Amino acid sequence: MNLPNKLTLMRIILVPFFMLFLYWDIPYHFTIALLIFAAASITDALDGKIARKYNLVTTFGKFADPLADKILVLAAFACLADIMQGQIINGIVVTIIAAREFMVSGLRLVTAEKGVVVAAGIWGKLKTAFTMVAIAFILIWYAIGDFGVSFDRATEVVIAYVLLVLVWISVLLTIISGGIYLKGYAKYIDMK
Image (tube, rainbow, N blue to C red):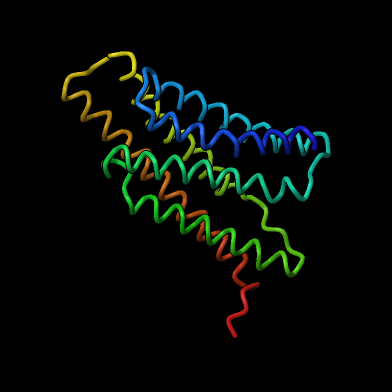
């Protein structure tokens, strides 16, 4: 197994630990979850670059890399929706993001039968990057609380609105990128 594939596999393995520390009520658990999420996000940035630069692209990587991304993002959004009790991230957000991920995965399956690869486009990459940033900012907000830092109510409201805007920009990019994928590859879906 080459290095990019090991990094992808490591990202998948980190997800349960990320989830564990989000919920495990021990000192600095949000900070630990943030660090795990950051490590997983870094592997996402590295594995593809290394694979392309050193010509280490494999079938496993083509399959596992987008899967690892989806697992990490959906786990983060689902857990944070639960922890935040529907504030900022709610079921609508999780459903839209999950629906887009299932749709793109379905397109990849359909087009693969016809020998066509659904490559990640700029909108998909932008969506992924912005989603990771939105999740990271939410985790940073929680990690700050691990250190007993508190803010006045007005500052908390402003921060909550900033986080809400980040999440909904991420959702908007999710919808746009999903629509672009669907438009670009709809011709491969046999409706007859």
